[in-house]
Length: 251
Image (cartoon, rainbow, N blue to C red):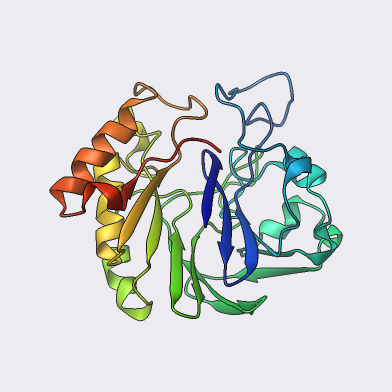
């Protein structure tokens, strides 16, 4: 099962395990609780109401993906393994968790009975004034038995996805970014358009798509509810049936 909690945060049940991706569940994507981009749609669940998490996936260090205030409020983290790209553990107290695993692109780890592979992303990292690209960024391919899920994290589009896709099982579901893309001259190097999000799913051979990174917080200039309409049209144009291109409601 997949539950969208807003932006890039999903609660996933896979092979009897509970996973959480990029939990930004507080009010602002900012180092300050009273300043910075503010979400206009509440989270599907407050951090305290989440079930115990077996695997926490963190794609990179931006404030709308690595939300330290949410991490501090997660319940029962003594059972949770955090999986993240290289260098990300410098930004939070990983000792609160059962284990912390850092992965390079295409590096693999077996976590809680799941095969987790870090997949490349076209993005960047920066959290302070002097740490640009000091940690890596990535997406994740999850495999459990015959089920697989792709979580792309934040990314632009490029040929790297078609290059690495043959090394991974085709996902049953690809969670792809479809928002925060305008103005293009500024965003094209780090964020997908809805059409490019569909291309990523197609490059990996995903059977179904789910749009994310929209409808929660206004980060860029496009109308906030334009992304799902363009995503739906692009998915159908790419050959996906309407019921295989998901535009979930938060929660």
